[in-house]
Length: 91
Image 1 (cartoon, helix red, strand yellow):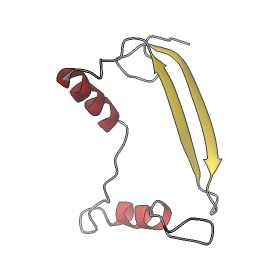
Image 2 (cartoon, rainbow, N blue to C red; image 1 turned 45 degrees about the vertical axis):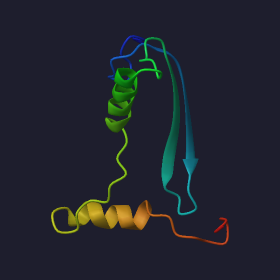
Image 3 (cartoon, rainbow, N blue to C red; image 1 turned 90 degrees about the horizontal axis):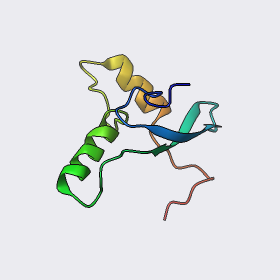
Image 4 (tube, rainbow, N blue to C red; image 1 turned 135 degrees about the horizontal axis):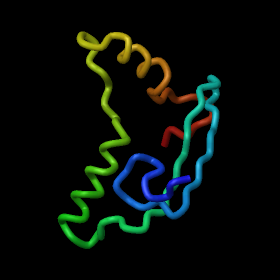
């Protein structure tokens, strides 16, 4: 209910939208759209850097190291790597 910091971020969230979808294997994933009041400007280098830092706090596209994090590596390979099926376009 606290719109100033409801997502533990440093921006004021004025509205938000969540949508949960399930992949073919039943694994849920979440789409999120946030409207932020005091977000940095995209037309400055400093603003773009702050936006990149903000996004990097929530998203990670790296594959965990197989030697140091074998369980994380196995889970990402099993559930998060795209494999072409008959339902997707390859071209």
